[in-house]
Length: 116
Image 1: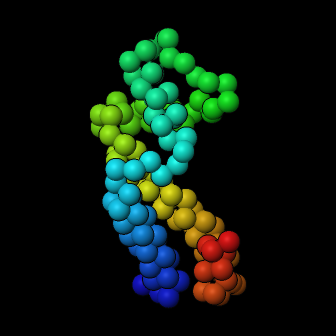
Image 2: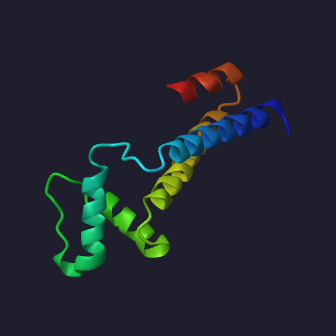
């Protein structure tokens, strides 16, 4: 494993561990004020079907994302949070891969891009 691949692996590992630690630490709390709104929209889709209410000021895709997770794993907020952790690490991997394609950049450039 060369230096750049090792650096990418370390960045992704640290990102995963930090995010999972935060999710497990904040296990029973709502981390965002609108979390309950999205949860209630997803629940109305689960139990209301066609009568589900989408407020006009909210995006419809995120409640559908939560609904799909609820259908697969039950109404578990922890499942939603853990899946979001893996999606955020995948986004970091995408950013790292894009930056990694720039072979002329140094490891310092790679770390700086990730921090921005």
